[in-house]
Image: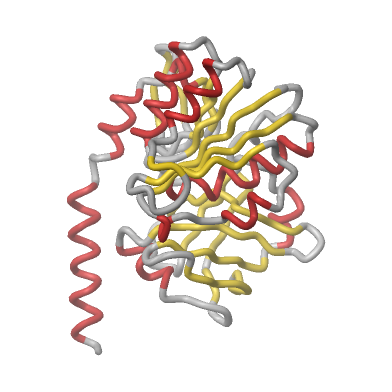
Length: 279
């Protein structure tokens, strides 16, 4: 069992949780992820590390409440425990020798962007962070980013309620056009990453993306997370989650992500109905 030692609600549907997992905390690196299961009857879900402490033995992750399992998870708190937490999984983000880098985080992907930006700064790179959300209420980890010794934090919101009223691709394009960056990394919804890739490819700037395909076991056994990169089949869990964005088939990725949408909505509806019956 993995005791929950930290829990807070970041916005209406976004939550941060920390669990005591010293063995995982000692090994975790930026860009890696974990698989968790709430109880013995629960499904496995992948979540990326947002923070960890090897000294204190805890790991943290951020999730959005979108389906049955994340709804269940959002109702847990300090004093509760998770049945299983497995990790760290995946290949750590490459952070050395990149020079001037733009790290772009959108939505819950911002949770991944934070440790990546921190690791890139620690490796001696000059880092500009671009964070995007639909509105100010959905922005997360702003204080944490401001505490990092980065060159600049650029905030974009769709409605202009915080920072610039723009998509994250606008400042990214400006940085590319001005020659201010040598590399970029985009982490967030697939559609956001797709357009970040299109922007950087047009202007000749490399762009790494952290993919979020459907996963079942997270160890390369099931093949559910397969994706096409440069015309080859790759597994998001063991070959990634980071890939050269200019080589990713985003149409295939997004199509595969939608396969279980109906099943997820049905499971969530049945869970709410069950909860209502017992309330």
